[in-house]
Length: 479
Image (cartoon, rainbow, N blue to C red; front, side):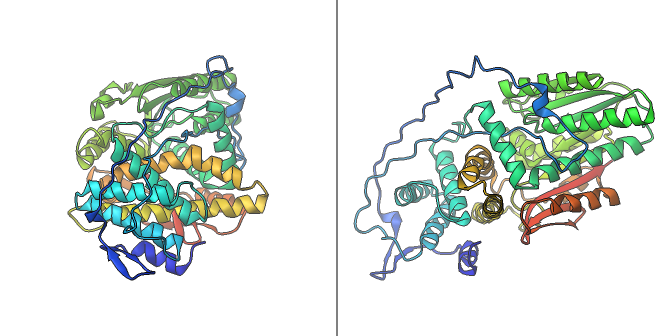
């Protein structure tokens, strides 16, 4: 856990110069320039990937015990080359006493340069940090800051170069399984979402509908829906009624092997349960909100949707973020959904935004470092308590957290409107959580490997925190 002084460093972002504490010489780095070269990363496909067997449906086996997770999905980011910077000239700041202080001072100076439009200085500062800290190690705060450095440097190098490269599916599955063992975050998001959907669909006036249409805007490997399907099958057996048909529309960034594999596994799993289950994949690609027109609706079906900030970032990349976000919510409202669940696992998940016109990049950037520092700190504590070791946490960082940080960096300062305000302006109203959902969420935390997690209601959302710092928030909305 980082010290109070380090926390203050996150909040103190007004430094204009970097001081050499040994000589008391203030150096303005804008006066110095370097020539450096960047080697484009190469992508090497696993030679065993094409011949490897598909993951069988049992890998997605769900259980009515929501606290025993079998979710299997993740992302793996291969190590990427960075800018090669020659040794700094003598006038560049020498290392000061605290690595944390030096890292954060230079990193926030780079963020300030981006706010002022000086990308050359930002690039120079980040490249210098790569020379000073070539590997990612140290405390949770230190590692979080270095991940943000790498993501921002990649973004500045080539904003059109994908920062998330494909990885072996089994490696991502393993990383996600370890994440679920160490943290209640995956189970919290999955359980609260499924419970809200089941209660909303069963209590609606159209509960007799024999067709359910779920729209998922961040499919991953779809393991959450195996739990939902199994619960649906169990309820039908208990009531001695025929289960409704289930149709899942997954809005995905592009057509990919992962999405196709997820769809195939879900179909096979549902067939084994005796459910009629279909999956439609709707790729966004470069179409933005125009891709939503490919979503099909049928008369008489009950509709529900699950959203995360990722879809707003994805659609917003094709235009003004707030315009595309509003268009998405208006589209959903026209579908008259029984419930819309919003799962936020990004920085500032429940915090109010800064006043207009728009939050600064630097402030959102600092908030992101603090957010992922808390997440990494919780993983470090759990790994120590369970004996899984640092290697397990490093795999989670590489395959899960790094792509999330890349998304956070790319969207820093993109929206100036809070999520609740955005839903309300689109005609949605918050839906309360049942006592059962709240009590079961608290039970889930008691099964966490370490103390320090807490769940509470805040601003209409159910919020998961680690030692007072928010990690996730689930909210439900209705027309």
